Length: 403
Image 1 (cartoon, rainbow, N blue to C red):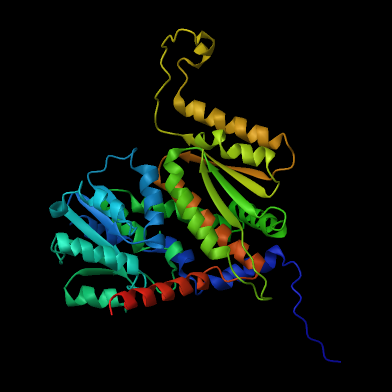
Image 2: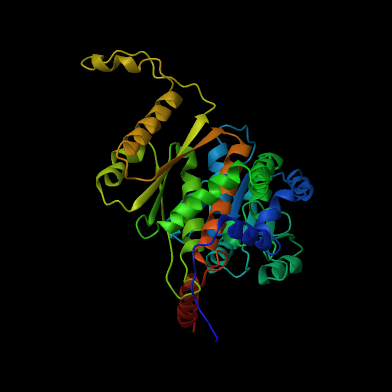
């Protein structure tokens, strides 16, 4: 008797782990935690410009922005980091007009080296100031067109490994180089990521947490297809944007049985969205999981002052409470209100403090979670065929314009 099948019974945790171990041999982001950062720090020490502009889009900017946004108000940084990542002319002009371009280092980042948005913005910058080896840095693949441009113009070039996808590249030169230049401790970033890496691959706490969460998301994806990250700090706004790209572009795929898969990511900020999106969570359809992210120590002791407001005496209990305590109590109230309903899946991740290790740990864990979810879903987390058609159409339309 001959027998063939395409059944895909639920894969075991052990099988998933073994798949990740095998994948680790050819998917590069896993091992970025072990890299030597000396070249990044050496270059960073030579940069004299006060302004750093990253020109890129998507995976070339979102991870770096997430870390910079989280840390910049708690660090004594001597340089300012800006991002030119959209072709919106109003955004470009409004940002550029407030920056001294003669005191700026331009970092052009594109994995392929031919990203239309990135090259378009770089062309515009070149019309405003001479971009050369003295004020320009390139981060791209070793054999890209952008790399050839850098070599032809004697511009310093740092490589993006071919086996590291853009949305997984924050712990490569893509993120570490600009962050090192502005004064963020990139070794501490990698230590935070490595702690999560080591815990996962040693099958310790991170492994148990990530695999359990991924399994739940995938096994209940038809009931709870929307994954809401509710971050209780405005400093995590950049993380939310990065998570949306990571989650959406990695998990929105067609699986090995030609079945369409995907988990819809939503990133919101507390307490702002307590007054809007929380209503939808609590009384809307039961199609959402909620992950609340808290910050234990905000490194800020700002308090509500003891100021008397006539007619509002009943709120005097707010006096002398630290704002960091207030926002965490708001988070706790949201968590308790959700848990009291008993039918909304909810978990809580608490960041220790506003420091490099904390944000790096969170981001690396989400990279692992994405990879494990993809394994459970029988999809490839690292390609993005769904966006390629749009790129091709855009190129054709632009070529017609210039004929």
